Image: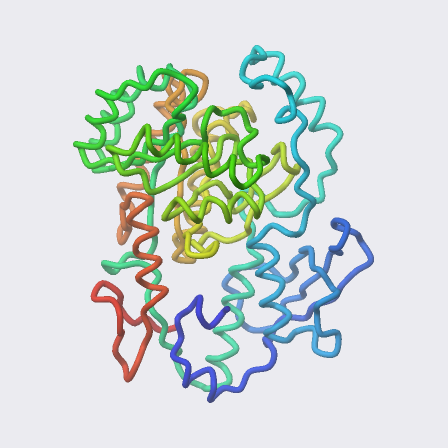
Length: 423
């Protein structure tokens, strides 16, 4: 799994004969994280200090681990897999999705009040870290660093992004209400200043869609995606046939715009649902790398700033905090920008994906405050060199291309856009 993430030539890993990752010491504690997971401490003892920390705390399922070689590559591979699939917490179905009516019929002030009460009942395990969680990237880097130290040479791998980019930046917009259509022009005016094309995700069966504006977005080079069915939050918890039927109805409504991606309302998800999505979409972007105060669990996320696969579907994690999350924290503009800049710098240094979701609705970024914050971020990004400004579908398409490519005799087979880099 880690070899395939880096796309390292197979002959190098065979020659190294690694059976453990050096510089990491795993110690499993008795502190419970969830029903099958306990917290473990990873002490960083090696020379590789890129992440500027000497200890990690993360949940592990100790049952399948090799206790005789806790720091084995197989153990760390299993740990990463469980984090990517969010198996470290119990994904309970939120109560509001069981209501006999759409929760959006409840007035917003009442919803916010009830949400505060429910959040107080949730336990904060302090994992994943927010807005940055380092665990997966730290383990991956120590793996390749161990290879480098053992073989005493630089290790070739396939670049994470095309066009010599250090990181990718992609923007999506979830249109939750009718008010979003009034603000499309305002957001596009800002984006044009900074040469940004974006993806617009619409709810097919909640409000009247202004197809004239949708067509204008598509004609301008933007992407159109699906944002659930009716924003009730019930979709991930239906049976397989009902999920498929509602997805087909939604796709049919937007079929002239060729939607290839999906975002679940409220980011509600489970593994069964993601598997069902993989039969209909090229990519999904419903999983944050790290999030807090969420209906699924107080803290949640896949813990990586890179795309990964759910079956044949690419998962594009939301790696920059959403506008609605930051607004609920009552931050001012500079504080909002500061959090985005901090996370963006972590992503840039580690060559990851900066995936952003901005809501054009009045309650989020469709107002003066939200528009100002968004433009401040785009202005900051415009000053950063070696970035790839891409639509979500372009990112997913590239990740599939990279996944099927490999290095042979010093050349990349399977991609004309990729290049060989060295660690």
